[in-house]
Amino acid sequence: MSEIRVDFNRPEPFGRELEYMAEAVANGHISGDGPFTKKVHSFLERELPVPKALLTTSCTHALEMAAILLDIQDGDEVIVPSFTFVSTINAFVLRGARPVFVDIRPDTLNLDESKLDAAITPQTKVIVPVHYAGVGCEMDAIMQIANQRNIPLVEDNAHGLFGKYKGQHLGTFGVMATQSFHETKNFTSGEGGALLINNAELIERAEIIREKGTDRSRFFRGQVDKYTWVDIGSSYLPSDILAAFLYGQLEQRDQIQSHRKTLWETYFTALTDWAKMMSVALPTIPAHSDHSYHMFYILLPNLELRQKFIKYLRELRIYSMFHYLPLHLSDMGKHFGGKPGDCPVTEDISDRLVRLPFHNGLSAPEQEQALEAILEFKT
Ligand SMILES: *Cc1c(COP(=O)(O)O)cnc(C)c1O
Image 1 (tube, rainbow, N blue to C red):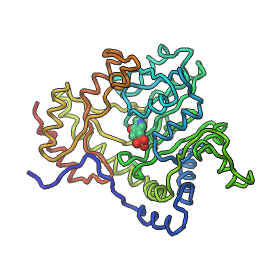
Image 2 (image 1 turned 90 degrees about the horizontal axis):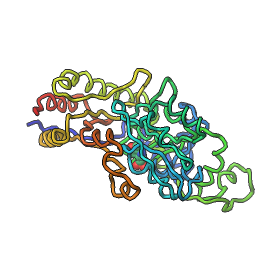
Image 3 (image 1 turned 90 degrees about the vertical axis):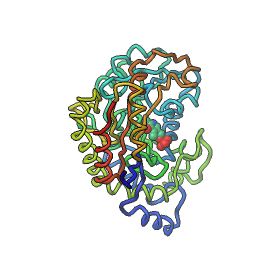
Image 4 (image 1 turned 60 degrees about the vertical axis):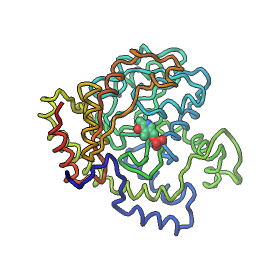
């Protein structure tokens, strides 16, 4: 057996992350909104482009800010896919909203736009699509429905930074979008996130909510001569030390994305024939989609084989992972009325999906080892 252990995820700084962290300390500004935070804001605003980017302590917190900005209240309904991370909906439930779970498409595993219209009621206050694996949702159809019904969209773009739908960056379609810089994402600061704001009318209030409900940002710009409590809010801004690490990562955008693209395409090519033979499905990328190379997943024929596959790889010290459990069948989901059969595609996919080792530090020999093992897997 080989000595190499193939991790599922391993965060690794490659560029100037550590140097920039030392610089942040030397700058004497290690709280939020220091020089590195400003560099990250400008980088995102320029590259996407987006009118305003605000770093947050997590994607979860960016979602919480979005819920406050949309004045979500008791009894409001929020439409989300059932196949997502808890934070996508929890941030809204925290403000009193009721989740309305919609099933996903069997090909891209994104919110099924054909089921959206039927899920909308007079109580619907926001639709939160998730670009799963950084492959864009069908934004033309989703935007059309949302615009017709006058319902705002918040994109949970935790997976999709730099991915595009029909040539436009994910995260620039909704009134707001949220990013994650958790260590499992393409670009990381350990824990971190960002709120992208596409509707300029929301910017000033977003700055206030992020600064404990005070107009501190206006004060620093010299627009007011003292700052005070003006709204609800919390402390959603990360230390400039973390922004420094993140800036070091974002600076290597091209290297990181091209490495991930190579890994993704190597898996796809090497597994194509094997997958056909084994009735395994590989990811579907629509022709109009430039995805973000966030993950590589495969779909085994059933739960039993999926479990057997994960265990088989683990015994060879190769670490793969299943993903989201259907939210409508979680304890909280059931509390809100979720029951088996509500989202049949989600229920099926959740049992069959495996994510293969995929991270910025994954080397060609490690990937080769994972591939050799996979190609020898017998049902
Ligand atoms: C990772 C993730 C989040 C949460 O991100 P944090 O930065 O850890 O709060 C939210 N939504 C999705 C889809 C995610 O993958």
